[in-house]
Image 1: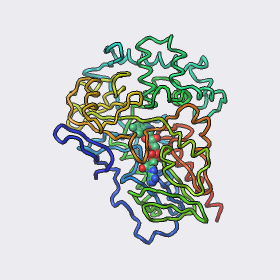
Image 2: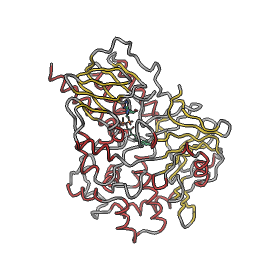
Image 3: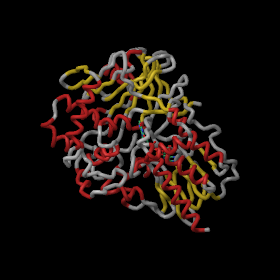
Image 4: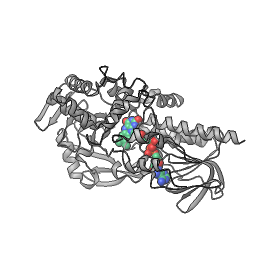
Length: 483
Ligand code: FAD
Protein backbone atom coordinates (compact mmCIF):
# COMPACT_ATOMS: atom_id res chain seq x y z
CA UNK A 1 0.00 0.00 0.00
CA UNK A 2 1.26 3.50 -0.77
CA UNK A 3 1.03 6.27 1.81
CA UNK A 4 0.30 9.86 0.83
CA UNK A 5 3.35 10.75 2.91
CA UNK A 6 6.92 10.98 1.67
CA UNK A 7 8.64 11.56 -1.67
CA UNK A 8 10.77 9.51 -4.06
CA UNK A 9 13.02 10.65 -6.86
CA UNK A 10 14.77 8.69 -9.59
CA UNK A 11 16.25 9.88 -12.85
CA UNK A 12 13.64 8.02 -14.90
CA UNK A 13 10.51 8.83 -12.85
CA UNK A 14 11.50 12.27 -11.51
CA UNK A 15 10.01 13.39 -8.21
CA UNK A 16 6.83 11.64 -7.10
CA UNK A 17 4.78 12.04 -3.94
CA UNK A 18 3.83 9.04 -1.81
CA UNK A 19 5.88 6.09 -0.60
CA UNK A 20 4.79 2.45 -0.20
CA UNK A 21 4.73 1.30 3.43
CA UNK A 22 3.45 -1.66 5.40
CA UNK A 23 2.23 0.92 7.94
CA UNK A 24 -0.72 1.92 5.73
CA UNK A 25 -3.87 0.38 7.22
CA UNK A 26 -6.54 -1.15 4.97
CA UNK A 27 -9.44 -0.95 5.45
CA UNK A 28 -8.98 2.58 6.75
CA UNK A 29 -11.66 2.08 9.39
CA UNK A 30 -13.52 -0.70 11.13
CA UNK A 31 -16.33 1.63 12.24
CA UNK A 32 -19.57 0.38 10.74
CA UNK A 33 -21.68 3.48 11.29
CA UNK A 34 -23.35 2.08 14.39
CA UNK A 35 -20.33 2.81 16.55
CA UNK A 36 -21.21 6.48 16.90
CA UNK A 37 -21.99 5.31 20.44
CA UNK A 38 -19.88 5.91 23.47
CA UNK A 39 -16.34 4.72 24.01
CA UNK A 40 -14.43 4.35 27.24
CA UNK A 41 -11.52 6.21 25.75
CA UNK A 42 -10.74 7.94 22.47
CA UNK A 43 -7.06 8.08 21.54
CA UNK A 44 -6.10 10.81 19.08
CA UNK A 45 -2.98 9.95 17.07
CA UNK A 46 -1.56 6.57 16.05
CA UNK A 47 2.15 7.23 16.61
CA UNK A 48 3.93 5.03 19.16
CA UNK A 49 2.37 7.00 22.02
CA UNK A 50 -1.18 6.54 20.73
CA UNK A 51 -0.57 2.93 19.69
CA UNK A 52 0.78 2.05 23.13
CA UNK A 53 -2.08 3.84 24.89
CA UNK A 54 -4.73 2.25 22.65
CA UNK A 55 -3.21 -1.20 23.02
CA UNK A 56 -2.84 -1.02 26.80
CA UNK A 57 -6.38 0.29 27.24
CA UNK A 58 -7.83 -2.33 24.87
CA UNK A 59 -5.89 -5.13 26.59
CA UNK A 60 -7.27 -3.87 29.93
CA UNK A 61 -10.78 -4.37 28.53
CA UNK A 62 -11.69 -0.76 27.74
CA UNK A 63 -13.67 0.09 24.62
CA UNK A 64 -11.21 2.18 22.60
CA UNK A 65 -11.52 4.40 19.51
CA UNK A 66 -8.27 5.35 17.79
CA UNK A 67 -8.50 8.36 15.44
CA UNK A 68 -5.61 9.26 13.13
CA UNK A 69 -5.23 12.03 10.56
CA UNK A 70 -2.87 10.12 8.27
CA UNK A 71 -3.49 6.96 6.22
CA UNK A 72 -0.98 5.00 8.30
CA UNK A 73 0.27 4.13 11.76
CA UNK A 74 3.58 5.20 13.28
CA UNK A 75 3.39 9.01 13.15
CA UNK A 76 6.97 10.30 13.07
CA UNK A 77 8.33 6.72 12.86
CA UNK A 78 7.57 4.90 9.63
CA UNK A 79 9.44 3.04 6.94
CA UNK A 80 9.17 2.65 3.21
CA UNK A 81 8.70 -0.65 1.49
CA UNK A 82 10.52 0.10 -1.77
CA UNK A 83 11.40 -3.16 -3.51
CA UNK A 84 11.11 -4.68 -0.04
CA UNK A 85 13.62 -2.23 1.45
CA UNK A 86 12.80 -0.07 4.48
CA UNK A 87 14.19 3.42 4.12
CA UNK A 88 13.34 4.91 7.52
CA UNK A 89 11.44 8.12 6.94
CA UNK A 90 11.52 9.19 10.58
CA UNK A 91 12.43 7.41 13.84
CA UNK A 92 14.91 4.62 13.14
CA UNK A 93 17.40 3.46 15.73
CA UNK A 94 16.55 1.59 18.90
CA UNK A 95 18.65 -0.03 21.59
CA UNK A 96 18.59 -2.10 24.74
CA UNK A 97 19.64 1.06 26.56
CA UNK A 98 16.11 2.33 25.98
CA UNK A 99 14.00 0.51 28.57
CA UNK A 100 10.49 1.00 27.22
CA UNK A 101 11.47 0.13 23.66
CA UNK A 102 13.31 -2.95 24.80
CA UNK A 103 10.34 -4.17 26.84
CA UNK A 104 8.26 -4.03 23.63
CA UNK A 105 10.96 -5.68 21.51
CA UNK A 106 10.93 -8.52 24.03
CA UNK A 107 7.12 -8.62 24.10
CA UNK A 108 6.96 -9.06 20.33
CA UNK A 109 10.01 -11.34 20.22
CA UNK A 110 11.83 -9.09 17.78
CA UNK A 111 15.28 -9.31 19.39
CA UNK A 112 16.64 -11.13 16.35
CA UNK A 113 15.18 -8.67 13.88
CA UNK A 114 17.73 -5.92 14.45
CA UNK A 115 20.63 -5.09 12.17
CA UNK A 116 23.59 -2.73 12.34
CA UNK A 117 23.55 0.58 10.48
CA UNK A 118 27.07 1.92 10.61
CA UNK A 119 29.45 -0.78 9.60
CA UNK A 120 33.02 0.38 9.28
CA UNK A 121 34.87 -2.49 7.66
CA UNK A 122 35.64 -2.08 3.95
CA UNK A 123 35.75 0.01 0.78
CA UNK A 124 35.90 3.76 1.35
CA UNK A 125 36.25 3.09 5.05
CA UNK A 126 36.81 6.70 6.05
CA UNK A 127 35.34 9.91 7.40
CA UNK A 128 35.29 13.15 5.47
CA UNK A 129 35.27 16.45 7.35
CA UNK A 130 34.24 19.50 5.33
CA UNK A 131 34.48 23.01 6.79
CA UNK A 132 34.99 26.59 5.60
CA UNK A 133 38.70 25.74 5.52
CA UNK A 134 38.22 22.89 3.01
CA UNK A 135 37.83 19.16 3.25
CA UNK A 136 39.98 16.33 4.49
CA UNK A 137 39.48 12.63 4.97
CA UNK A 138 40.60 10.53 7.91
CA UNK A 139 40.00 7.18 9.57
CA UNK A 140 36.87 6.54 11.63
CA UNK A 141 39.17 6.17 14.61
CA UNK A 142 40.38 9.74 14.10
CA UNK A 143 36.77 10.87 13.58
CA UNK A 144 35.83 9.36 16.95
CA UNK A 145 38.81 10.95 18.68
CA UNK A 146 37.97 14.42 17.35
CA UNK A 147 34.28 14.31 18.18
CA UNK A 148 34.77 12.66 21.56
CA UNK A 149 37.40 15.19 22.59
CA UNK A 150 35.18 18.12 21.52
CA UNK A 151 32.09 16.69 23.22
CA UNK A 152 33.92 16.16 26.48
CA UNK A 153 34.92 19.83 26.54
CA UNK A 154 31.35 20.83 25.65
CA UNK A 155 29.60 18.82 28.41
CA UNK A 156 32.16 19.14 31.17
CA UNK A 157 30.23 21.65 33.25
CA UNK A 158 30.93 19.98 36.60
CA UNK A 159 34.38 18.41 36.31
CA UNK A 160 32.67 15.02 35.85
CA UNK A 161 31.34 15.34 32.30
CA UNK A 162 27.76 16.00 33.44
CA UNK A 163 27.50 13.14 35.94
CA UNK A 164 27.22 15.46 38.93
CA UNK A 165 24.73 17.85 37.39
CA UNK A 166 22.55 15.15 35.83
CA UNK A 167 22.98 11.98 37.90
CA UNK A 168 19.48 10.60 37.17
CA UNK A 169 18.66 11.20 33.51
CA UNK A 170 15.14 9.81 33.90
CA UNK A 171 14.35 12.20 36.78
CA UNK A 172 13.98 15.66 35.38
CA UNK A 173 15.76 18.42 37.33
CA UNK A 174 16.82 15.98 40.08
CA UNK A 175 19.62 18.46 40.70
CA UNK A 176 17.79 21.83 40.60
CA UNK A 177 21.01 23.60 39.58
CA UNK A 178 20.84 21.76 36.24
CA UNK A 179 18.13 24.24 35.24
CA UNK A 180 20.75 26.96 34.87
CA UNK A 181 21.96 25.14 31.75
CA UNK A 182 18.52 25.57 30.23
CA UNK A 183 19.18 29.31 30.13
CA UNK A 184 22.02 28.58 27.69
CA UNK A 185 21.82 27.74 24.03
CA UNK A 186 24.35 25.45 22.38
CA UNK A 187 25.86 28.62 20.84
CA UNK A 188 26.27 30.17 24.32
CA UNK A 189 28.04 27.07 25.58
CA UNK A 190 30.20 26.90 22.47
CA UNK A 191 31.38 30.47 23.14
CA UNK A 192 32.52 29.41 26.62
CA UNK A 193 34.79 26.64 25.33
CA UNK A 194 35.57 27.77 21.78
CA UNK A 195 39.14 28.80 22.69
CA UNK A 196 39.94 25.22 23.71
CA UNK A 197 38.76 23.57 20.48
CA UNK A 198 40.87 22.76 17.44
CA UNK A 199 39.31 23.75 14.08
CA UNK A 200 38.44 20.08 13.40
CA UNK A 201 36.87 19.74 16.86
CA UNK A 202 34.83 22.89 16.29
CA UNK A 203 33.42 21.61 12.99
CA UNK A 204 32.83 18.09 14.33
CA UNK A 205 31.10 19.41 17.44
CA UNK A 206 28.81 21.76 15.48
CA UNK A 207 27.92 18.93 13.12
CA UNK A 208 27.13 16.56 15.97
CA UNK A 209 25.11 19.04 18.07
CA UNK A 210 23.09 20.02 15.00
CA UNK A 211 22.51 16.35 14.21
CA UNK A 212 20.88 16.09 17.65
CA UNK A 213 18.68 19.21 17.52
CA UNK A 214 18.41 19.92 13.78
CA UNK A 215 17.69 23.50 14.81
CA UNK A 216 20.34 26.20 14.92
CA UNK A 217 23.06 26.42 17.56
CA UNK A 218 21.23 29.53 18.82
CA UNK A 219 17.86 27.84 19.40
CA UNK A 220 19.18 24.54 20.78
CA UNK A 221 18.85 24.15 24.56
CA UNK A 222 22.19 23.22 26.10
CA UNK A 223 20.30 21.59 29.01
CA UNK A 224 18.60 19.18 26.62
CA UNK A 225 21.89 18.32 25.01
CA UNK A 226 23.25 17.47 28.48
CA UNK A 227 20.15 15.35 29.03
CA UNK A 228 20.82 13.34 25.84
CA UNK A 229 24.45 12.97 26.90
CA UNK A 230 23.41 11.64 30.33
CA UNK A 231 20.97 9.19 28.71
CA UNK A 232 23.89 7.95 26.62
CA UNK A 233 25.91 6.99 29.70
CA UNK A 234 27.90 10.26 29.51
CA UNK A 235 29.95 8.98 26.60
CA UNK A 236 30.32 9.50 22.87
CA UNK A 237 30.66 5.75 22.38
CA UNK A 238 27.15 5.27 23.77
CA UNK A 239 25.79 8.23 21.79
CA UNK A 240 26.66 6.18 18.72
CA UNK A 241 25.46 2.89 20.26
CA UNK A 242 22.11 4.22 21.44
CA UNK A 243 21.32 6.91 18.89
CA UNK A 244 22.33 5.50 15.52
CA UNK A 245 23.41 1.90 15.44
CA UNK A 246 20.63 -0.71 15.69
CA UNK A 247 17.54 -0.70 13.51
CA UNK A 248 14.85 -3.15 12.42
CA UNK A 249 15.60 -5.25 9.34
CA UNK A 250 11.94 -4.90 8.41
CA UNK A 251 11.76 -1.20 9.30
CA UNK A 252 9.96 0.70 12.04
CA UNK A 253 6.58 -0.06 10.51
CA UNK A 254 7.18 -3.78 11.17
CA UNK A 255 7.41 -2.92 14.88
CA UNK A 256 4.51 -0.45 15.03
CA UNK A 257 2.15 -2.90 13.34
CA UNK A 258 2.60 -5.32 16.27
CA UNK A 259 1.10 -2.80 18.70
CA UNK A 260 -1.83 -2.16 16.37
CA UNK A 261 -2.47 -5.83 15.71
CA UNK A 262 -2.40 -6.74 19.40
CA UNK A 263 -4.92 -4.01 20.17
CA UNK A 264 -7.12 -5.16 17.29
CA UNK A 265 -6.95 -8.80 18.41
CA UNK A 266 -8.58 -7.87 21.74
CA UNK A 267 -11.80 -7.05 19.87
CA UNK A 268 -11.95 -3.79 21.87
CA UNK A 269 -10.40 -1.49 19.27
CA UNK A 270 -12.34 0.64 16.83
CA UNK A 271 -10.21 2.79 14.57
CA UNK A 272 -10.42 5.31 11.77
CA UNK A 273 -7.58 6.68 9.65
CA UNK A 274 -7.73 9.81 7.46
CA UNK A 275 -9.59 11.44 10.36
CA UNK A 276 -8.18 14.77 11.45
CA UNK A 277 -9.51 15.70 14.87
CA UNK A 278 -10.57 19.34 14.94
CA UNK A 279 -12.25 19.79 18.34
CA UNK A 280 -12.19 18.15 21.76
CA UNK A 281 -14.95 19.25 24.14
CA UNK A 282 -14.99 18.24 27.78
CA UNK A 283 -18.61 18.73 28.80
CA UNK A 284 -20.84 16.04 30.39
CA UNK A 285 -18.73 13.51 28.56
CA UNK A 286 -15.83 14.20 26.28
CA UNK A 287 -16.73 14.65 22.63
CA UNK A 288 -14.31 14.58 19.74
CA UNK A 289 -15.12 16.10 16.36
CA UNK A 290 -13.45 14.69 13.30
CA UNK A 291 -14.35 15.23 9.64
CA UNK A 292 -17.95 16.15 10.45
CA UNK A 293 -18.57 13.30 12.88
CA UNK A 294 -18.73 13.47 16.66
CA UNK A 295 -17.62 10.64 18.93
CA UNK A 296 -18.01 10.58 22.70
CA UNK A 297 -16.07 8.88 25.45
CA UNK A 298 -15.48 8.90 29.19
CA UNK A 299 -11.90 9.98 28.64
CA UNK A 300 -9.68 11.21 25.80
CA UNK A 301 -5.96 10.76 25.31
CA UNK A 302 -4.49 13.37 22.99
CA UNK A 303 -1.30 11.81 21.62
CA UNK A 304 -0.48 14.53 19.06
CA UNK A 305 2.89 16.34 19.07
CA UNK A 306 3.57 19.73 20.67
CA UNK A 307 3.93 21.66 17.40
CA UNK A 308 0.37 20.79 16.28
CA UNK A 309 -1.43 20.83 19.63
CA UNK A 310 -2.84 24.31 19.05
CA UNK A 311 -4.37 23.16 15.74
CA UNK A 312 -7.03 21.33 17.78
CA UNK A 313 -9.66 23.50 19.41
CA UNK A 314 -10.26 22.58 23.06
CA UNK A 315 -13.33 23.46 25.13
CA UNK A 316 -12.76 24.57 27.83
CA UNK A 317 -9.66 26.19 26.34
CA UNK A 318 -6.25 24.82 27.26
CA UNK A 319 -4.56 26.48 30.23
CA UNK A 320 -2.18 29.31 29.33
CA UNK A 321 0.97 27.31 30.16
CA UNK A 322 0.11 24.50 27.76
CA UNK A 323 -0.93 26.95 25.04
CA UNK A 324 2.26 28.97 25.42
CA UNK A 325 4.37 25.80 25.26
CA UNK A 326 2.61 24.80 22.03
CA UNK A 327 2.97 28.29 20.57
CA UNK A 328 6.68 28.25 21.40
CA UNK A 329 7.07 24.75 19.98
CA UNK A 330 10.21 22.74 19.55
CA UNK A 331 12.90 23.72 17.07
CA UNK A 332 13.65 20.57 15.08
CA UNK A 333 13.14 21.11 11.33
CA UNK A 334 15.30 18.20 10.23
CA UNK A 335 15.66 17.24 6.60
CA UNK A 336 16.40 13.51 6.58
CA UNK A 337 17.28 12.37 3.08
CA UNK A 338 18.10 8.86 1.87
CA UNK A 339 20.32 8.26 -1.12
CA UNK A 340 20.50 4.89 -2.85
CA UNK A 341 23.74 5.02 -4.79
CA UNK A 342 25.53 2.58 -7.06
CA UNK A 343 28.90 2.76 -5.30
CA UNK A 344 29.02 -0.37 -3.13
CA UNK A 345 32.34 0.79 -1.68
CA UNK A 346 30.64 3.72 0.12
CA UNK A 347 28.93 1.46 2.71
CA UNK A 348 31.60 2.28 5.32
CA UNK A 349 31.82 6.00 4.55
CA UNK A 350 30.66 8.81 6.84
CA UNK A 351 30.99 12.60 6.77
CA UNK A 352 30.26 15.99 8.23
CA UNK A 353 30.11 19.08 6.04
CA UNK A 354 29.43 22.24 8.07
CA UNK A 355 28.22 24.94 7.64
CA UNK A 356 27.95 25.22 3.85
CA UNK A 357 26.25 21.96 2.94
CA UNK A 358 22.46 21.78 3.39
CA UNK A 359 22.99 18.16 4.48
CA UNK A 360 25.54 18.41 7.26
CA UNK A 361 25.87 14.84 8.55
CA UNK A 362 25.71 11.53 6.67
CA UNK A 363 26.80 7.89 6.77
CA UNK A 364 26.34 4.51 5.11
CA UNK A 365 23.17 3.06 6.59
CA UNK A 366 22.61 -0.19 4.69
CA UNK A 367 22.69 -2.16 1.46
CA UNK A 368 19.56 -2.34 -0.67
CA UNK A 369 18.31 -5.64 -2.20
CA UNK A 370 19.94 -4.72 -5.51
CA UNK A 371 23.31 -4.36 -3.78
CA UNK A 372 23.40 -0.57 -3.87
CA UNK A 373 24.60 1.48 -0.91
CA UNK A 374 22.08 3.33 1.19
CA UNK A 375 23.39 6.60 2.62
CA UNK A 376 21.34 8.60 5.11
CA UNK A 377 21.90 12.35 5.42
CA UNK A 378 20.61 14.99 7.82
CA UNK A 379 20.17 18.73 7.44
CA UNK A 380 19.36 21.29 10.13
CA UNK A 381 17.87 24.81 10.30
CA UNK A 382 21.24 26.61 10.11
CA UNK A 383 21.02 25.86 6.38
CA UNK A 384 17.46 24.71 5.85
CA UNK A 385 16.48 22.42 3.01
CA UNK A 386 12.98 21.59 1.75
CA UNK A 387 14.04 18.74 -0.54
CA UNK A 388 10.89 18.57 -2.66
CA UNK A 389 11.07 22.28 -3.48
CA UNK A 390 14.49 21.91 -5.06
CA UNK A 391 15.43 18.34 -5.82
CA UNK A 392 18.44 19.49 -7.84
CA UNK A 393 19.81 21.29 -4.79
CA UNK A 394 19.20 18.14 -2.72
CA UNK A 395 21.09 15.99 -5.20
CA UNK A 396 23.89 18.54 -5.27
CA UNK A 397 24.07 18.53 -1.45
CA UNK A 398 24.37 14.72 -1.46
CA UNK A 399 26.98 14.65 -4.19
CA UNK A 400 29.00 17.37 -2.46
CA UNK A 401 29.13 15.23 0.67
CA UNK A 402 30.71 12.44 -1.34
CA UNK A 403 30.68 11.83 -5.11
CA UNK A 404 27.97 9.27 -5.86
CA UNK A 405 25.81 8.10 -8.71
CA UNK A 406 22.20 8.12 -7.60
CA UNK A 407 19.67 5.40 -8.22
CA UNK A 408 17.07 6.92 -5.95
CA UNK A 409 16.43 9.63 -3.35
CA UNK A 410 13.75 9.12 -0.68
CA UNK A 411 12.58 11.52 2.04
CA UNK A 412 9.73 12.91 4.09
CA UNK A 413 9.69 16.64 4.76
CA UNK A 414 8.90 16.84 8.49
CA UNK A 415 9.18 20.63 8.60
CA UNK A 416 6.18 20.89 6.27
CA UNK A 417 4.25 17.90 7.64
CA UNK A 418 0.79 19.12 8.68
CA UNK A 419 0.49 16.56 11.52
CA UNK A 420 3.93 17.13 13.03
CA UNK A 421 5.28 20.56 11.96
CA UNK A 422 8.74 19.36 12.88
CA UNK A 423 10.80 16.22 13.39
CA UNK A 424 11.81 14.77 16.77
CA UNK A 425 11.36 17.11 19.75
CA UNK A 426 14.26 19.40 20.57
CA UNK A 427 13.50 22.37 22.81
CA UNK A 428 14.79 25.92 22.69
CA UNK A 429 16.30 27.27 25.93
CA UNK A 430 13.80 27.55 28.83
CA UNK A 431 10.91 25.63 27.24
CA UNK A 432 11.45 22.69 29.59
CA UNK A 433 12.12 24.81 32.68
CA UNK A 434 9.01 26.88 32.10
CA UNK A 435 6.62 24.36 30.63
CA UNK A 436 7.54 20.69 31.03
CA UNK A 437 4.92 20.25 33.76
CA UNK A 438 2.36 22.20 31.72
CA UNK A 439 2.92 19.92 28.74
CA UNK A 440 2.49 16.79 30.88
CA UNK A 441 -0.61 17.93 32.79
CA UNK A 442 -4.08 16.59 32.05
CA UNK A 443 -6.95 19.01 31.45
CA UNK A 444 -10.21 17.77 32.96
CA UNK A 445 -10.89 14.39 31.40
CA UNK A 446 -8.37 14.89 28.61
CA UNK A 447 -4.91 13.38 29.04
CA UNK A 448 -1.90 14.57 27.07
CA UNK A 449 0.74 12.07 26.09
CA UNK A 450 3.59 12.37 23.64
CA UNK A 451 7.26 11.60 23.31
CA UNK A 452 7.80 15.38 23.22
CA UNK A 453 7.29 15.62 26.99
CA UNK A 454 8.49 12.23 28.21
CA UNK A 455 10.88 12.45 31.14
CA UNK A 456 13.35 9.76 30.06
CA UNK A 457 14.12 9.28 26.37
CA UNK A 458 12.14 12.39 25.46
CA UNK A 459 12.20 12.85 21.64
CA UNK A 460 12.61 9.14 21.05
CA UNK A 461 10.38 6.15 20.36
CA UNK A 462 11.19 5.05 23.90
CA UNK A 463 9.71 8.28 25.23
CA UNK A 464 6.56 7.73 23.17
CA UNK A 465 6.08 4.29 24.70
CA UNK A 466 6.80 5.73 28.17
CA UNK A 467 4.08 8.33 27.60
CA UNK A 468 1.50 5.97 26.06
CA UNK A 469 1.96 3.67 29.04
CA UNK A 470 1.52 6.57 31.49
CA UNK A 471 -1.67 7.83 29.86
CA UNK A 472 -3.32 4.42 29.50
CA UNK A 473 -2.59 3.60 33.13
CA UNK A 474 -4.06 6.90 34.32
CA UNK A 475 -7.25 6.30 32.32
CA UNK A 476 -7.55 2.66 33.38
CA UNK A 477 -7.16 3.64 37.05
CA UNK A 478 -9.64 6.50 36.86
CA UNK A 479 -12.27 4.39 35.14
CA UNK A 480 -11.73 1.56 37.65
CA UNK A 481 -12.42 3.97 40.50
CA UNK A 482 -15.77 4.92 38.91
CA UNK A 483 -17.06 1.34 39.03
P1 FAD B 1 3.93 11.08 16.66
O1 FAD B 1 4.70 9.97 16.08
O2 FAD B 1 4.10 12.41 16.07
O3 FAD B 1 2.41 10.64 16.62
C1 FAD B 1 1.35 11.55 16.71
C2 FAD B 1 0.25 11.13 15.76
O4 FAD B 1 -0.83 12.07 15.89
C3 FAD B 1 0.67 11.17 14.30
O5 FAD B 1 0.40 9.94 13.69
C4 FAD B 1 -0.15 12.30 13.70
O6 FAD B 1 -0.51 12.09 12.36
C5 FAD B 1 -1.37 12.30 14.59
N1 FAD B 1 -2.07 13.58 14.60
C6 FAD B 1 -1.55 14.82 14.77
N2 FAD B 1 -2.53 15.75 14.76
C7 FAD B 1 -3.69 15.08 14.59
C8 FAD B 1 -5.04 15.49 14.50
N3 FAD B 1 -5.42 16.77 14.60
N4 FAD B 1 -5.99 14.54 14.29
C9 FAD B 1 -5.66 13.22 14.18
N5 FAD B 1 -4.38 12.79 14.27
C10 FAD B 1 -3.40 13.71 14.47
N6 FAD B 1 13.38 8.27 17.67
C11 FAD B 1 14.14 7.21 18.00
O7 FAD B 1 13.89 6.57 19.04
N7 FAD B 1 15.20 6.82 17.22
C12 FAD B 1 15.51 7.49 16.07
O8 FAD B 1 16.43 7.10 15.34
C13 FAD B 1 14.73 8.62 15.71
N8 FAD B 1 15.00 9.31 14.58
C14 FAD B 1 14.08 10.22 14.11
C15 FAD B 1 14.25 10.79 12.84
C16 FAD B 1 13.29 11.63 12.32
C17 FAD B 1 13.48 12.23 10.95
C18 FAD B 1 12.13 11.91 13.08
C19 FAD B 1 11.04 12.78 12.50
C20 FAD B 1 11.96 11.38 14.34
C21 FAD B 1 12.95 10.54 14.87
N9 FAD B 1 12.81 9.97 16.14
C22 FAD B 1 13.64 8.96 16.53
C23 FAD B 1 11.77 10.41 17.06
C24 FAD B 1 10.55 9.51 17.07
O9 FAD B 1 10.19 9.25 15.75
C25 FAD B 1 9.41 10.22 17.80
O10 FAD B 1 9.84 10.69 19.05
C26 FAD B 1 8.24 9.30 18.04
O11 FAD B 1 7.92 8.54 16.90
C27 FAD B 1 7.05 10.16 18.46
O12 FAD B 1 5.92 9.35 18.68
P2 FAD B 1 4.59 9.99 19.22
O13 FAD B 1 3.55 8.95 19.11
O14 FAD B 1 4.83 10.59 20.56
O15 FAD B 1 4.26 11.20 18.22
